[in-house]
Length: 446
Image 1 (cartoon, rainbow, N blue to C red):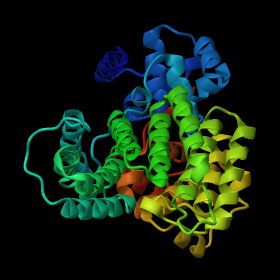
Image 2: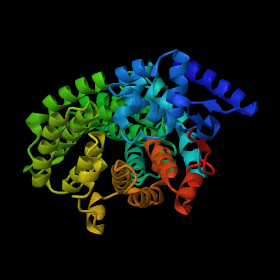
Image 3: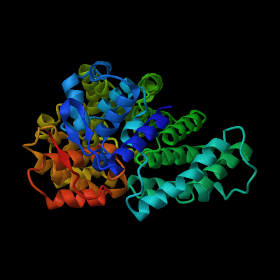
Image 4: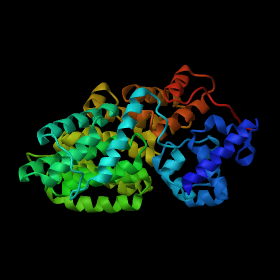
């Protein structure tokens, strides 16, 4: 229903544009909706109107003021908080994807290749289970495990096209070994399958396929539960929480989080020779902080962050299954959580952003994510730090274009910075073109 609603609204919008008319926005503002077809605010306005809901009603359900919602719809305020998108989607009775418009058309060839790998991954995850799968030949489990390790490395560097190559077939063959292999082969296949599902989730989520990411994360937790390795149980739990939160399923995310935390805690000794279980427990606390921040529970978010910091101080920089748990990553997460709590600028000013700090993050994914969060934080300043926000967003895109160009928050930051720019800025025009947005839109405020 929600998808049909959005499609109908776009058809009506197209008709308005073909007639050469301008759409009258809230409070008498004239907006060229065609030019902002990828704007979250424009989608929110179209859906609200099709629902026949007033600004007052939707704003109240979303926990914001009528004036704030009106400014969001008109593009005068940006969506730099993911939690705000989730709250508004819930208030409008639509999905997060309806608001963000993901998945987007591929902005470049490599993204197109990455998206092209997802149908085979989806088929494998829907056709296979831990008790049944197609009867197909399977390569040796050692070969498959090596391919999965390579895929995880590519995913960590945001080379999703390389990470997804042959992943559907690898998943299916691993399920074959899990079902029909002798005990030692079965166990090795379960470990590789868990990591392969983590990779599948890690590719699908940034490319806008939230349902597939959630399914892959759930399959990862199912496989990990049979292995008896605490670090995998914790890390896959964290992966599933992240996928559910991005989908907007906060209730289920909280339930999964609490269960995973209680399971992981007895094994989380940061001073042990094997810090994997503690790393997984720490990542779960970071997920807990994320969930709490998106719901505006600042005290709970800080409690989870404090737990993660204490663990990281003892473990040091670690990298079980490329989750990069350690002081640097906790530092980066603290910024993302501050942005969700609308404390971005003040926290960003206190952080160490030296080259050594970015090097400690250990991967293109983490470095680009930190730059994006710095951009989001400075964009919350209201315009006086937009030049800093632009610099960090440009850097994030150059580090990890496949990730950043497909992120609806990054897209909205580009639009926000562009709207607030007092004059044409080459760097903003370049970002719009790299993101596949075209030239600067027409926007007339009456």
